[in-house]
Length: 361
Image 1 (cartoon, rainbow, N blue to C red):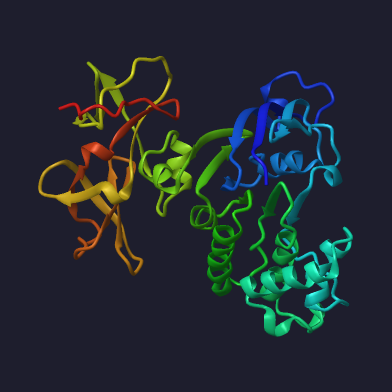
Image 2: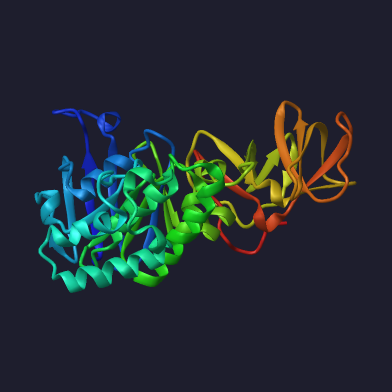
């Protein structure tokens, strides 16, 4: 396995880019440690597949370098990078048995047949496909086909990195959780460096130890699932992760404090100095409660989602969501919103602009 370093990386599909808007990937500096489980998370068009193709060697970046264990592989072909890749659609040979599909990457490299048999047996057991090893791949269900495709990527134990490009897209929803759990279990057992590309926050957060969130060709935050949820570094992260996403509320800053609809809002800490054109308060619905004091609002909608109830309110024309467990108020009722100070922060032009110091009163 390998440590992967992306150094001063940029990429444009134009031959002569003239400005930032011409770049599919803007400046990226990133290290992935040997044996880690990572996810690239973001909406379609944010640059994650471009980045994956650069790491795999299918694209040569316009600028910057890719290093595997400090060895520059920027100009090397995919076959010279010693990687394995699992794609969105299963890549297997329908006319072969499951056993022969799993063995193919090893046999193709001249691995001793005894070693092939042992390794195929190990991977089959991990993936729970031992009982179908002698079945033709054409007869498999979609989830078993993708299991075999994953197995083909994992059967070699000498690769630098295993990369997954939205591997669960074609899997039925009721089967996805099984494969997500299986993939996490596989990583814990084989400890290979794995990179998982997805637009699905659930897949990213359940698989990865570290999640790289991308927007418009930029990395906006790298962190653990808990860090991304509890303290988003950018409003995009707060909006993209969580269901419902973080409340992002327009506000004014006066005398070092934040005002929402003319009312002072206590923040997690002091507002950091800086210039910007837009200031907003960010607070997740989980940290908004309904009480008898606080910011006055009108209930617009109530949704019972099973585990909790989402109450959508209006403060003026600004929507504010709260997650509660008690009996909800009626639609049209007047309520008061209370924000947990230690979970309420200011963003300037999208970026976090409060410190973690003791909350300002």
